Length: 305
Image (tube, rainbow, N blue to C red):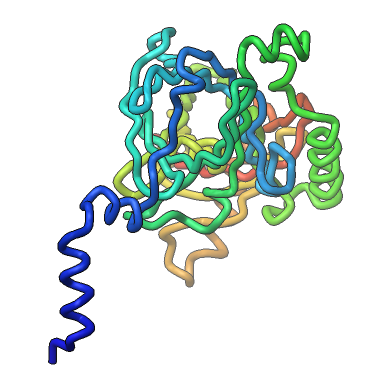
């Protein structure tokens, strides 16, 4: 039954300014007028640990340049077009905004610096995992040049703490270089360089925006298609492998094989890796901060007789 109290609330709400009602629901827009025309350089991109690397080896690399043009327009540097490109600044709710196909929570605005939290959305929900655990710091061009008396490129370099963390991951990985659990993604991925005309290799992208697979998947889980002609027989396998710091390949998982044949097929595939791939390619291990280490990759291995 519709109560008298409900009727009273409804009558009050009907007379309330719709803009104020909207503000109560999703919050008030921020005012960017004090920073319009100031060019900001991204100088830090950090996890909540304060590091730019996580335990998977993923690096948050600062690259953005932005400039607010108005309260609803922001320009951002486009590496593809090599120029600043305008984007509509879409207010979502609270301090959450969208521009350049990314969502951000804007935490701090001053003429010298900005602090954003980069957000990952699944559907309409903000992910609460590591994908939204990214804090971004921008410094203004004037602040970098005249106060800090340095350059954006210098400020963007990994810190001593980053280096120490990566060295600790490498030490752990080197204790058991074939173990996928201690291997981690290389900032520079594994490289297969053919040394024979009977082989070819292609790095495959697995980016799928509909499934939420961003470019970071290609970084964390690099995938290669290797084809060998004049093989001992025709074959096709899909597998995961750890490439150790010396470039040796150790299969860790074989896919799409019946359980009763798994043991024999795994032995055959490791043989192909040791005889064909190892001798027909120069295999360069993945590395981070110029230090080689074990990393896990996926391979589609094709042989043609």
